[in-house]
Image: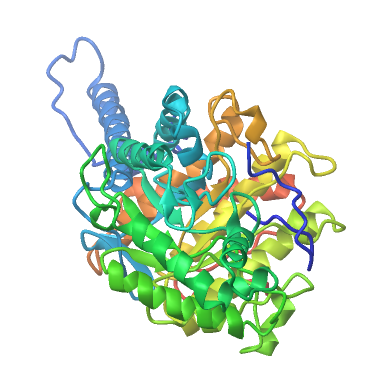
Length: 506
């Protein structure tokens, strides 16, 4: 998550301490035409009896369609323990079939799980998330220096904290949730770049500010050592090396890289190239992403119009074109980036932001895209839970529509962030407690089902007929989100599935 206002690194978000939505009723005429024999004319007329059985069978067929759709949802949502999610062109695939998902962030899991008495919180969140169809979780595989650190000093690790991460991975596997593990923070929370530079300074290296993280050989050596230690770690619960565990969907090089010393993006790009090559040399099985927010740099000046008024020293296009990077990521926080604008303007920005990067991923990068952070803060002026639900609903619909239009190139979204009971010290305003926020849980569950059915539909052979349950879910998703957007006073951009064009310019 972003921890800054424009240009400056201001820490304003704390990082330290149901049921399936019912499908629309299927029409009777969709059921097979049945003509049962009237064996008891004394009870009803032949016509009435025939109509009675016809209606019964129609309802039965509708229920069966619903059950089949639910089974498809469950089958797609639960990852096979022996299969890695892979990239093929602009799609993710699992066992050869398109893989779309709905997911969440819970950055705190390793830290909490390092205390065995608190591990129930991790289990609670993973269980509730799985019940809502949230099948991908992004969390931290770092905590550098300070209290409760994973890496106490360069190359020195706290086994107790590492075992907390072991538990997170094992528990995620048992709940059918895949993980995106981030390897370092841009910000000072949990150490981050500043801690690495401080360590190098303490060792006598000639370093200046935090941006030397990207260029100083000593600092880069520390980072590579951490990557090696995490990737080659043998899980004490599963006895599987992290680099061999398909529960892990992908590695993330750094959470929200930024570099004030070089706004062109070239410094960060050189670092990404070096670290991506190194990471892939250790682990060729897992996918790799950078952790970018999506800010455009100098390689395509015409794209800077989509930035929220400033640059952060990254180049979304150039860095994501690196061969070792498997998919691109963006974050969306218009409530922070455009805090002075109204709700409608902020949501419109988020929709343009997503559209622009989806267009890039499809036409330029030719790689999948994931919205790895989005949410709405309770600290925002005028916040209500309904406002949050409408906003999340609108973002989810854009994800769904762009996924459908681009053949799955926008493959999923991860809401920020899901927490368990009794975690008030971790609250940052964006917290979602699925057991206590049933309306938000329903919005997320609905998106999970829509994305799963869409993946199931995409996996059908060319020319195959889409089932009624698939049609109903697709229609339900569009209608429901359009309704939610109207409540919010927004203009919904309808994206046509066949040609990928939008009926209104973003």
